Length: 240
Image 1 (cartoon, helix red, strand yellow):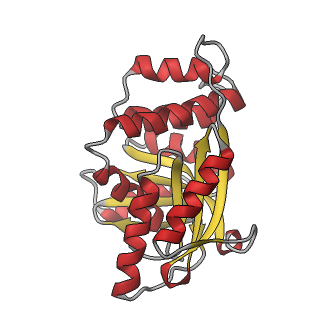
Image 2 (tube, one colour):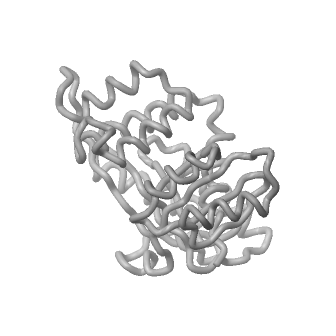
């Protein structure tokens, strides 16, 4: 079952936003705040917050910004702001399926703006449930390159509980059961491996192969969605 299109989307976003550090920090602030609000400000007891902190640090977000965002979310700061999670199902060019996750302080505004982006770039909103069944939630860990050969790395991943592994350029992508993500992360780190990303994702059960025209349309749509401040993640069932 192929499914590394999500990691490719992440890399695409990071490459396109290297010059937009403010936008990246804005996304990280929202992610940290809502994780702290839902699970508390202590990363030792809040796995989602630990993941958010790791993502923020990998984006080179200053520690003081991270702490301020956590305090806001936990309602401990003077400048508290209310954030909400939003999830949309959509169809893109070539009948690709998209799951769009976001964080916003205005659900109605974000819905209309995301709908407008989809309409402009060859997509459309889908009814609830018409797309999500094409995906399965899973844990994903991205293992950074090391001096070990591929076979040894894959063996360590299997020992850490991997249900599937695949390579994307130099990175090893490890898939685990959602409830075992934290356990597998610790196992890989104790084995001396460096993790670039780790998170719960929606993995497509099957990927579509697009012709060149639809591939270009899809890339433009993903670029526009990635540029929207409220959009956190986009999952799709097509190879990039």
